[in-house]
Length: 197
Image 1 (cartoon, one colour):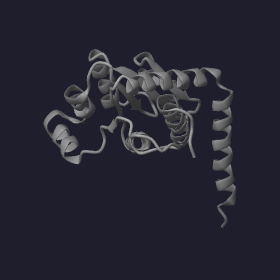
Image 2: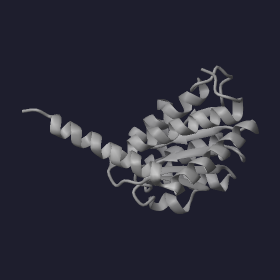
Image 3: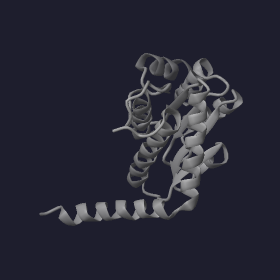
């Protein structure tokens, strides 16, 4: 039995979400605000931290890797750290403090006033992400949320929140990849100059 119909359905649903993103002026405004927040952070010699769970943890790592390495430009590395990579730290925090504290404790240890975070949660309600946002804000850090659905609890907490217009988790995650690729391209341009291929 062929899977062609299912494949075409998924591709069509992806296209519908991408078209909804392109038509959403508010989405463009929130992405632009995030670019300005992150670019100012880097120009001021501060750090961008990123975090999330599961696929969002992988997205946090992908986003920071593009900044530390390069996206389009040959340029110096940009200061970015994913809080999802140090297995010894993560497992000790989960064991000693509980999973809800896994990002909070790292932000307490590493974050400084003027730093920024990219907090990623498809639902906007992940307890450890919400707690990490709260800690970042008490430290005077800038917070950009990346989520979907109705934005969840995250929507009312962040300096700006980028909400993918979908209720379907895989489509939200695909939207997140598109958004942080846009962020990387524009941050690189803002901080380092014109695009060089």
